[in-house]
Length: 269
Image (tube, rainbow, N blue to C red; front, side, top):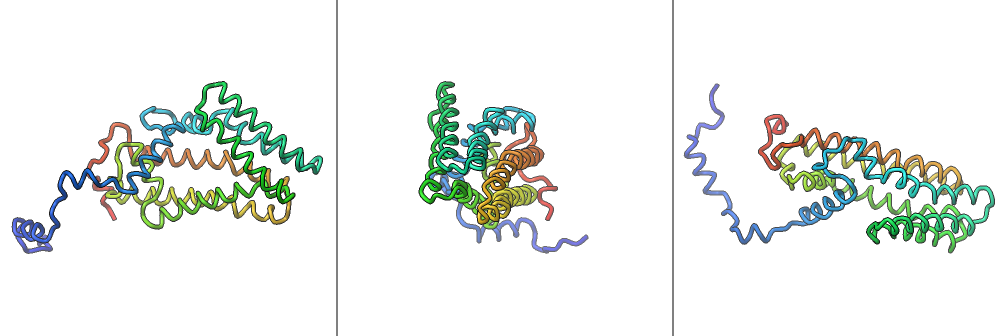
């Protein structure tokens, strides 16, 4: 079968080298920490602290259970909100409902501090509960207790969606720095596609929460709003985290060379 380019390989290499930019010096390469690398390093470290560590060789279920914090994490995420919803629905007493919610968050924070958890991690739940309680105390509307959650979903959803649309999907950045591959996955079309759709899926989760919960918010239906928020919280998060972990491990099998050239399958269009 005739070659598509009649130029001899040596001549073609010479022609390519003529128009190629000069290689970066060692000093220039060492001074090139890009924004993506900085974000990847930060997110990768945060993911490892949360329990997402490929080197630990955990099963999918064990990894998800570790990330959500086991039974304690489930109770911390659901009990304060559940106490607020049940108390307010039964008594219509906004202050009592918020007090119970913040009080339970304070109890869990105290337990974390007694167990020598990092102060920032221990106090984050209490701070979130206090901030969420501040708005309904100011407005007198119980449904405003969920506004901070809406803002969080908008922020995370937008971040994942925008990162996918600009071809720097957050999932790829995180996985790359977790596996030691860095940004080499951008040269593998199969990985780029997978990380693109995973990032879109995460954006879809956060935006789906908004679409389902906002009608209950505008209707002032606190009971339904709280129930839906709990159901779309840890269960949906755990399922998508498990899917992301499975796909990432299939794309980056243990023992593979990080940063190795893309395979023929990766180079397929």
